[in-house]
Length: 192
Image (cartoon, rainbow, N blue to C red; front, side):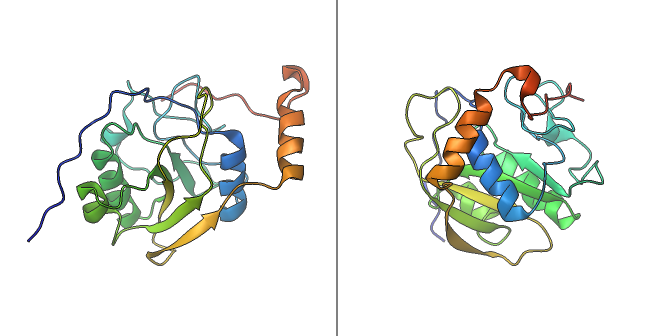
């Protein structure tokens, strides 16, 4: 059996925040208002109004990733890209227990972690449109994919043109420039 070469962990910044316009597109696609929990976050970059796991509370060792909120079934995960394997492995394991996880990763289809924990375990949306993470000066240099781990969606893949129209982008820009007191965004709660 042929094995793909071992991945070399990167030395780049690992805690970029997912851009709000991408998160809004994902929530619209999943037809949800919010994510239940952010499974790899900090005070500065969490995306769920319900709660998050940070490095100290480490969601990889958490008992389960099933929804802790009745409002939404879906959890969000934008893991550190330096070592993705334990994250997608946990996603695959938790989806077998009933968890629903939307996971943003590089589309590294030749990586061992992809072969072992994505190909037969997730519905893959290859992203048409590069993502520029909050705080980054340019789009992420690799193609990305949104992995949907859930018992309710068939395994397979599709190409998703996620970028919002110019009109929606303009509205998001206007909303994000409002003073904090009039903004509709919800501050992140503290971690577990």
